[in-house]
Length: 506
Image (cartoon, rainbow, N blue to C red):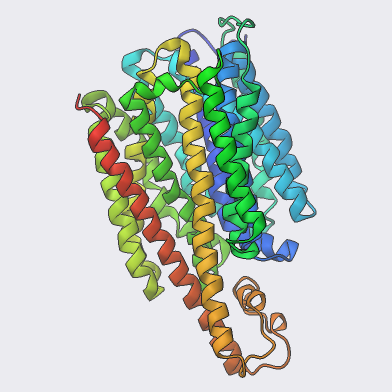
């Protein structure tokens, strides 16, 4: 044990380490959205292909985070947490060294495995380090500190990309991971006992993985393979069958992957639905970053800086949300936060057509103030309402729900945004076939990412035609982004209705 860690300050060192880990997961979700155009140029691919860089990370977390919480209950949360950080560290190095899109996607999958191991176990370690009356404040402080990187992640990602390389977005995880390993190894006592008598539900894990993976692949590839193609239909049927198998398996097995009895807790199920729906809004940040760069024409660093109104309020609203939870309970801050998010997404869905950043600023601020009022109170209240022996699996289930919301939500938004964008451009090219006989959808789409490079079109086109195509590409993507915002507003409205019905007054 290191001398600077004492019994009096141990819990604060633990809180710091967990904040670092949450910060890493934030950076790898928000900063990546800003570097997508740079990745597109590096690997010479389309924007739609890059969606796997985002979604494979979310998919691996969503599928594995439940069993990671269960493993923490069985084999000590400290061990699983440190293993997760180590895997995340190695995967980040692989991401930074990627020489192809396939390499990067595989490394992101491994990174998701590491994040899945550390996320639920970090939450339980933090909660166990503090007394019940301090947990709301502690989790609020943790989210607030880590949210510095949520707020600055897009800016840092853009700055690194513009001045150096997008690879630095992943290299930055190395010192953070090493610091977290050092602190947790020193500060967390080995007081937990292994329970090797319990078994892992591997059949449930496999069926859940098949169900989630086939559904996400179907949503992501439906626009390109055709929604009525035999491959997509087969994937959807497989997802339904695997889901049914998973449910039957969980109801019969002695040690299920998901304890469905927890869903009898109204506070827990309300939080799960809220997280699932709210995560769709967060996934819109990816398309917002593309909009700022490819439609509004900002450089990566400026595009990241312009995302601050939607992320910066999280830094100081996290502790405020924690204090509101301790004083009033979860219902009041959650309903307030969801209402603000609905207002923000609805405003921007209409104002985005003006293609002016300042018109979008009020809506971005509403979203930024609203999200932290939901996340910390709902998470802390839900996990604290579950008996201590099941807090690990409850944390895993809650995080899995949130990650499934992000994973499936991003796949759904990708299908809507990229699908509408493709349909609009193809419709234009079909009507204007005589004016643009040799132009394809892929060429028009790449115009924005390649800074309007005429080589992407070819020699047989005038400057006026080029400018017209650029205008068409910007207009179609703007309309598609607006449709994504409308989808987000609808999902959060469902969460608001759920919170009104299931969150009790204190």
